[in-house]
Amino acid sequence: MTVTEAGPPPRRAPDTGRTRGRVARVLDAFGVPASRTARRALAHAVLGLVPGLLGLLLVPLLAYGALLSITRLGPPLLSLFLMANRGLTAVHRALLRTLLGEDVPAAPPGTRRPVADPNAWRAAAFSVAAGPVAAVAFVVQLPLRLYALAAIGYPLWFRSVHADGHRGLGLPGSIPLDTLSRALAVAGAGVLLLALAGLAGRQLARLFVLMGRALLGPGRLTGRIRDLEETRAVAVRDSAATLRRIERDLHDGAQARLVAVAMSLTRARDALAPERTDPAKARELVEHSLSNARTAMAELRDLVRGFHPPALDDGLDTALASLGSDIESATTCVRVRTDLPDRMPDAVETIAYFCVAELLSNATRHASPATVDVTAELDAGVLLLTVRDDGIGGARIRPGGSGGSGLHGLAERVRTIDGTMSLDSPAGGPTTAVIRLPVPEEPEGTACAS
Image (cartoon, rainbow, N blue to C red; front, side):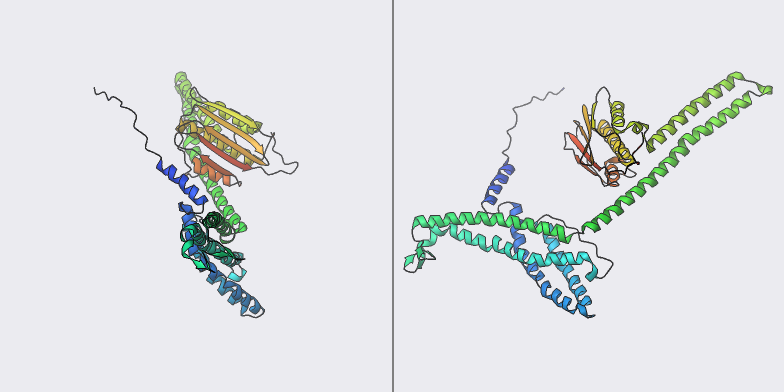
């Protein structure tokens, strides 16, 4: 047997990455582009100047097309200018993605001509607005920084300059900057100017990102239509998978059990025939039939519970409490806290119940937690569900779940009623899943019955 003796703990290497990050943030605050983000913002200001100024050409072109719109030549010209602008906005989109880290999806082209496409006009508005913003960003990020650096170094070179009979430069009003104290004041003003240039450059980069989100991406209506199409496809796919599961469970489960019951009862009847009476055999067959009938009833009960859990008949708070009782074991303690109204719409309650059930099952099956906390509360018309466990963590929402199974399936099911799901599960835990479900106000007389 080999015994390995533990030596002294190894020395921890200095956290150079964190130190570099702090130094970079300090330098960024003083206007020196030390961090990667600041350098990319500077590169965006330099590279975005040309496409930004080209966008200003749209102003006279669109004005010319608008003047000709009273003739048949105007609309085709406007459509041509708007189509040409797509290439320019593609350049802006690429710069935003590679330098500012903002991936703005392209708006889908409309089925009509560009002159009648609102997305094309929004892109044109971005190109026109980007021109002056790009010019200001370039001036702030490059010439203003260079001017500030020259001012900072003024104490080193002011003696080599002669103007108006004195050394150094002069301010308006015949105020010479020819002494060391005045030169140091100029250097201090240069430090302040450099810091202001850095701050203004960061704000202008954020302005570009906001403009890109608002004008280059799909419009709110387009995004809403796309989201509805995706959630409708999810609902149809989920319904088809549910129907296939029901058919499979009925065919392979309850139906087979009932067939076995019928066959056993037939054999029992034959065993009780007058010419061949065999009570022991008949009793055995009847007992076997009863066992199969009970199993078929249990399978049908489980199948029906998949449609609408009976626990929801008494409200979501009671159903969640029953889930906690079912999951709790000698190694896992489940604590459920609810603050809910009497009843909510059936769709909201059903999805909330299945989501909590799936999250509890995943936690106990994969995370080995000691404690799981479930909270459910209604906040400003939104049902907020939180499931937190102290397990090993490392859970991820990975595409691939179908038919509402898995975390990805839960996220898709939640989206069918405009809900959202977020998951925070670092390695080592804890894992926190938060589900938000909007609760629509139901007209009077349509409330859920208990």
